[in-house]
Image 1 (cartoon, rainbow, N blue to C red):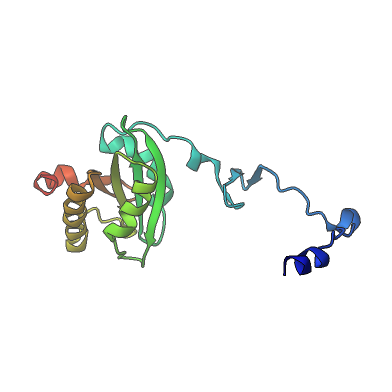
Image 2: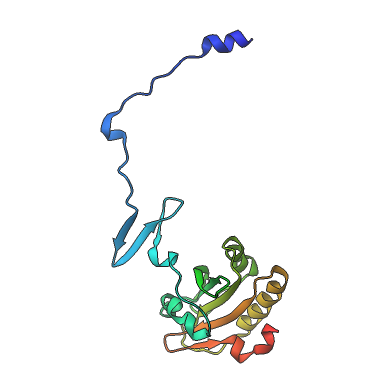
Length: 180
């Protein structure tokens, strides 16, 4: 039986299709509309700014520059800032994009990336396109739920911010008891 395999084994030559068979090399960086994009490990492009720490978060106001992109959105967008041991922003991740006035926040989606990034803590934020900074009952329920899950996972929620074009609200400052 071993003889059969040896006798049928041949060396195949790779056909030469010339230069036309080669794909042009994908550039490591490209600029679109003034935004620099870089290749990620999956072959796609992401904004270069996503790879750079966006500062240290000592107060809720320190997170605002990183949240500028969601403040003007006509849809509610929930993001999580993954923070390292020095409260430096490691990554900002979009968790969900909702309707004009609501969006779901699920702990599984919030913590998946934080665990993968080895985050020490997180800051959750979302926008209110209406401009109303008052947290909804759903916002408060989601905050309490995330804080409860954080106790099990060991990655604390530092705050949950609501941002609008005109300002921001810290749920931690408004409802400190939620953060135990």
